[in-house]
Length: 271
Image 1 (cartoon, one colour):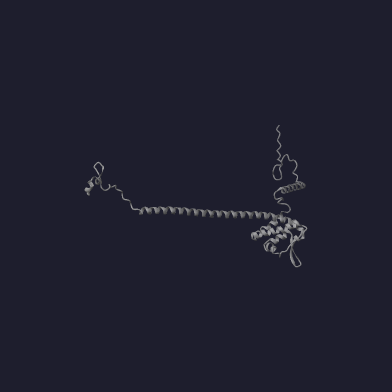
Image 2 (image 1 turned 135 degrees about the vertical axis):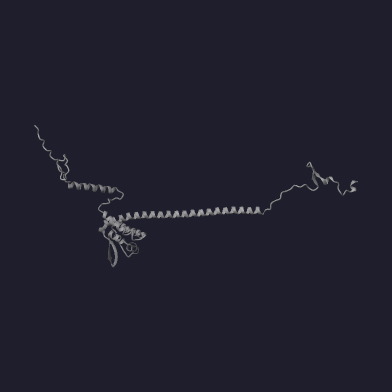
């Protein structure tokens, strides 16, 4: 007797139409909020530990990151771009000096203020663009005492002062290194130009010496040629026998005068 096979039931599937894992008997549990927070805390702690051992000495995304970025923007483009470079660097040095004085002498109130009408302060902090804004970001605020204007540091802004001073040191180090590189490049370019000028000068002098030597040789050659042209040609020398001599056919010399009697023979000579 044949038994009809029961139709195979379809495999269970998820709501998205994908088959479920046959070994997954329980539905997935949502992540625990405490576990997520603990993991985030561990990750933040590890980042801080890495930042403490990094050359910068701080995490780029710690609680002071936005404040540092604000100070950096106040310097560039705020101060460096609109002002002459030398004046901008002098202004940054002055701001750092004011901040260092407060940090080095926290109990001395004389370092907590500066007068904007002072000649140097006016030239490097008041007149340039962006410098007073940086001083105010450090914690200095304008006040009037006895009808005299001052900028006085607010002690409650000490953390801002430290952050702004660190950014000043960072920028000053970078800019001074850049200035040193530019100065070296200028000196090297100047030395290269001087060497090129000296090379051209030496080549010119060497050419002059060669030309003078060549002119002397040509002058000597022309003088020798003129002396040779002015000397008359010498006639060939013909050997002649002295008077009273002759030659025989055999080539013997005969003294005719000696063999002939004197035409003035004196008889007394015979006696």
